[in-house]
Image (tube, rainbow, N blue to C red; front, side):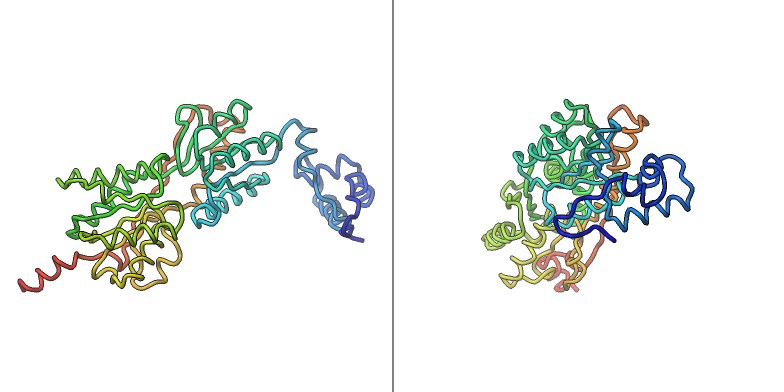
Length: 350
């Protein structure tokens, strides 16, 4: 009978072995997947474990073997589809490699990041994949001899490996797209500039303006806060200025949502009166009309590649820090167009 009652004593490996009619070592090999066990014996052991409700104690096994099959993953905000997709990619890669993922959310706060690092050390994880808030996390884990892979952003280039996208090049290409349409007053909505993501996207934006011979108006680089509602308020103020922008480049999907809502609140038609482009695609962007032009990252690939890089280090196949750059692409939808003033002039000349 399955031992799954509330408060029931947990079954032991000894009981599983007795139920399956094998030794404890054979039962252990059958359940861990390590070492040879005949397939019919493996099936019998697993059936016995299922009937007894036996679950492998990963922590105890790690202590016994002096190694861990746990990989820690810490992301900045699971409410953001980007980070939840990154975690999903990491989970898939962990499972394929025979590891169990321990997922924590630091909410983008340094104190919570530190707490996550301490938790991973206490759990004796084999390694960690992190979307770091500061360089502190990587330094702390490296001191405890726990391998780290930084994902999405980079703080410790000289000491740990990373999986990122070329934020600067992608932001430059995005801004060039708007310039090519004829926009000159292009606003950039940013949540932060202390991380490589926000800083590099701002640099790409200014690179494109300078290359095109256009002055950079600091009033058009707008800090918004961290969520869609804060971005909505910032974008509302921006669009109500006497000299509003003709285009908005939102540095992530939540900021794009805030800008979209602000335009709708004010009755500003997209793209007739305002062009909008986002860094990060999100499902809603292809569901609204017009669809939102977006830079597409592959967060699942970033998560999976980060776990892969970590496992390479655990196997001793990668020693020196390296940076893996995941490509991006732009999906052009209906939210970007020629500025209304230029469109009017073109119609008049025709």
